[in-house]
Length: 178
Ligand SMILES: CC(C)(COP(=O)(O)OP(=O)(O)OC[C@H]1O[C@@H](n2cnc3c(N)ncnc32)[C@H](O)[C@@H]1OP(=O)(O)O)[C@@H](O)C(=O)NCCC(=O)NCCS
Image (cartoon, rainbow, N blue to C red):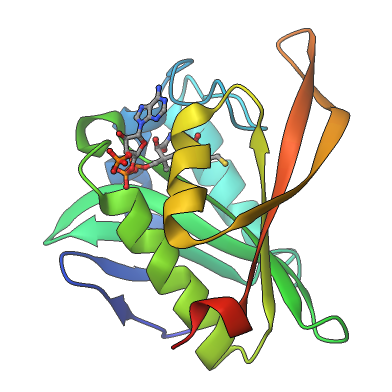
């Protein structure tokens, strides 16, 4: 497991460990609101969350950076960096903040720190993310950090029986780093 620790003004972003599962689970358990704009569905039993965590180890290449977000000792969300493409110098990311902690600037703080990590530590030049067209909060966060909406992906996926359109966003190192 990587030993990266990213400190922001208010938060610590560090690799998710198995001991985080009981801290994470109450926030996602049968939480259909938190997950309405995400491509996964909420678990109902903690064993499901342990199983997902244990499966990560079988495919370490799939998403090498899986982080928990902590405010002090309190677990408040997760962020992952995936699809690292060394040729294209790009990576993709996904994140969520637990509902009790939303709309307090943490998502923006995390995304800025992850962009810096991807550009400065991983030496990549482009960070990409996709957002459901209905997910206005996430679009606001992307735009606050400086991402550009580059295209619409029609019928990107099916969620709860409905075809979903997404916006693809990207952020370039040259536009983000001072
Ligand atoms: C998207 C998410 C990570 C943002 O985290 P956060 O900590 O709430 O974000 P911030 O507090 O930094 O910023 C939220 C911004 O959205 C704005 N916002 C909130 N609700 C909004 C709405 N319905 N429409 C438009 N903007 C909205 C807030 O006012 C704030 O903008 P401001 O600083 O200009 O006032 C969080 O809402 C979340 O986890 N959502 C569920 C999972 C998800 O959608 N993940 C992202 C998938 S791409």
